[in-house]
Amino acid sequence: MSDQGHPPQRPGLTRRDFVSTAAGAAGFMIVPRRVLGRGVQAPSDTANVAIVGIGGMGASNAQNLMSHNIVAICDVDNTLLENKLKQWRDRVYPAAAPAAARPAASAPAAPVSAYRSFGPSKAQQAANAKWAAPDPSATLKRFVDEQMPKVAKYRDYREMLDKQKDIDGVVVATPDHMHAIIASASMSAGKHVYVQKPLCWSVHECRHLVKQAAANPKLVTQMGNQGHSQDDARRGQEYIRGGALGDVTEVHVWTNRPLGYWPQGVPRPAAMRGDASKLSWNNNGVNQRLAAAMGQYPVPDGLAWDLFLGVAPEVEYHPIYHPFNWRGWVDWGQGALGDMGAHLVDHPVWALDLGLPTSIETIATPFNGDTYPAATMTYYEFAPRQGKPAVKMVWYDGGLMPPRPEELGDERVDPAGGILYIGTKGKMVQETYGQKPRLLPAERHNSYGPPKETMDRVPHESHELNWVNAIRGRDTISCPFSYAAHLNEIMLLGVASLRAKTKLHYDGARMEVTNSPAAGQFLTRAYRRGYSL
Image (cartoon, rainbow, N blue to C red; front, side, top):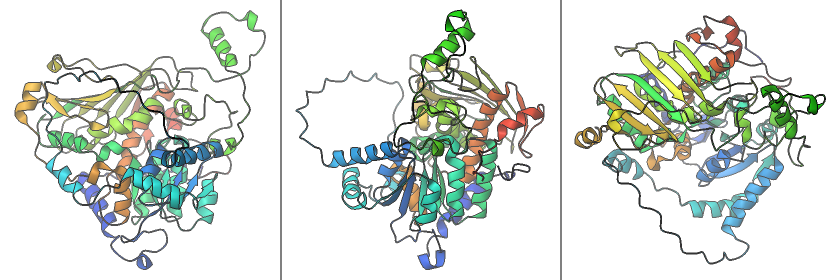
């Protein structure tokens, strides 16, 4: 990997820096294409977008961008790509009339919450009035009728960037290990980029992308943590910034993933070595049997497995890896913290102006080094900053939960995911994506009322359209790399502590683990031959 000896340092970023940078990035757009040059979209145009990775969130991103022009789709799995196009076509032109549906069973009544709901903010309503939201059915039909016959298909992002010159922006929705290298190549080609979370696989990649984005301020960058553009998330920010909690000193963040989503804590598939009948039924013997029982499978027709591996080490194909289950494997994913941290850790980092942590310690159920463990807890310590006290943050996944606050009373905390803030004047909870912010207890929430609205809202809470509208000069970008890379570094330090099997004392200015030099290897990785940032 290039530039490993001295990875770029992340300059300090205040909220004021972020706002002025984002405003400048939007402001430069209001000029003709001939002035802007290659890859930059004039505000009067419709953006030409390429999607790299169409199986999961890439398909969702594409659908949310179909009011623009999807000009290219790149995926290493031709079968997956063609199936997705067929699904869209069948939705517009079903092969046969659907059978008469049975009357829907009446859903059980939702429990009555003691917490008042204040409805959409006035700021959100004003933002929605700026432009009409696209009709999803109409845009899908337009895509199927007009764009699908012309869309270019690729397996290798490098070929796409080399051949197709009409692309204005690239959406990167591949497995995590390819995010940074595709985003970097796209920016080098003059393309705006939208990258699914987590932004990067390694801390070094975070530093690289934020440096590259800063060197190319005309390019609009966005990370795909869509909750960052939601009204509730910003209302939660306004509670905290408005002083409703006083000084926040402790934060607890949890998700139930990977439970019910993808496997973790399992052995890597491998042929049985020796005579299975002679194995003991201890942990080692059971794991060897499980590994062999998974069998061996040929690479499916249509899948370019070498391109899937990309920067990662050589591993033989197995269906437990692709599609989707790659997220639980160290080679390609970042587990539950990498997956959901961008939707949950985001909100305290954003609201509290948290810098990089000074110490990080992850404890876990057994970890074999290949696939992430079934459950983890990560303890972060953040130093005091700008007159605000130190903060302790704890992450829980795999069904682990923080102690239940007494102030909740009979209210049920959502086990799927949430955030608990503990401040000198009170407590607050939010759910995944920053939804349903509410002060504790209910009596205080109801008497306090909605917080003073001080933050702008994203029209229709559309994270993808926020990106293309920022490209067109019509909006300020929500979650640019200047912020997203910092958030991801915090998340990935928890993964690094897990892999290093030790507490990390961290010097963020130098990107250095000070108590365990050997742990520094988990902040970066060596790429396979043929790939470099």
